[in-house]
Image (tube, rainbow, N blue to C red; front, side, top):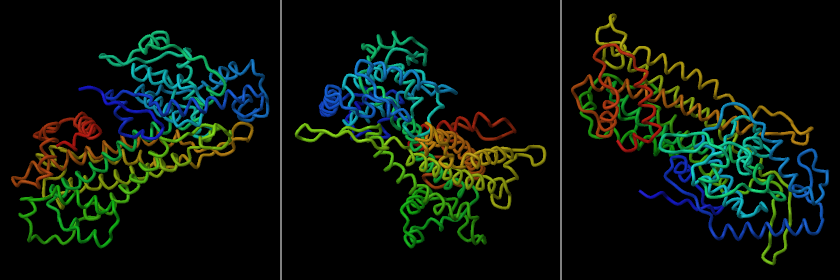
Length: 508
């Protein structure tokens, strides 16, 4: 199948496009309209240089040194010094797939046409993306304000030929020189001109990368959580009535209604439900009965997060910005679009959401372990006492919830002033968004455990579950064989987690 083409136009970049680039099923292409827009703003920069007028970011120092004027003959060296000095990140290396996403986001932001950068600089970035060549970027260094300066500087080092790259081929990722990378890209290193170094590193691209992946995963995980509820209802022969649409229409929050409708549809035509229509259990535990009321707000928050991020992906986030009017006049305005508070607060909120989804899932797993609720042997063991069954799966889920509790602490409240106090409030958005990736990974393990336990319990009844649950049951039992004797389940959790995050439940 031919790769999808993602147009880099400053207006239409989406989370789905970025995931396609990550997964190597898309190529990027700069549009003619974006080229014209960038060329117009570049002419404004060149006009300023010709006039000798002093303008921040074009012929001045940066940050606390913005009052220092730089001579015209030193402007190229100014940009080179900026990149070299700011490329001081530390910590583990960013995943190369994430670097390619970050490059795409940076290119699209520049394509908005307010940054004063030459189109050929963006064309070089896109050529490297299409060649699957990602500069090596240490993850830690951004404060989430003034842009993701350190990581983007390492990216820019690659563009000027002063960094090693990771190249993807059939065998995975291998380290190559910048010379080799530009050969693969059929391009050459950039010689930076006035303002271009600043435009490359002054933006929210790393934060947007991490948040794009996290939102994509959390949307899969909220769907998985509803699937897990339906399986757990069947596992303990729970009531379907809490998911009746009349309940949720009487409190018509959008997410709550979506969650309830999903669960109810998965339970349709259940022989298990028919078998206990006249049982004496009046109400199920909150972790089942109130699942739409817990999952629903998270669906709502994710919808809002997606809207915010879609705007951010198609915004000019560097400083200063150049605005060209229809007559060719222009104005250069300094502001703060590089500040990632929107991304940081959203990520902090979603980290709490990940904890809540895991917390209520672990409680449902606990119900399945109890004969009082499931009607099964304790811990789904085969011989009580001799076997432990799935006892420790719940422990592992509880341990994941404990880690998620720590990760739910906000990053955006950790302000540290820098640049001699001129940059006196930062978002810590990079910290917040990367933390969220860890949260979604842990959540996937907890939901995997619930699915493993609920499907094992369903397997021990001779009755057929609802149509949707039956499909999920078929998928999970292909991955995890029935528990006929005690065995290690670590690999089972990992495999189900991987299936969830790859979207496997959507197609079951």
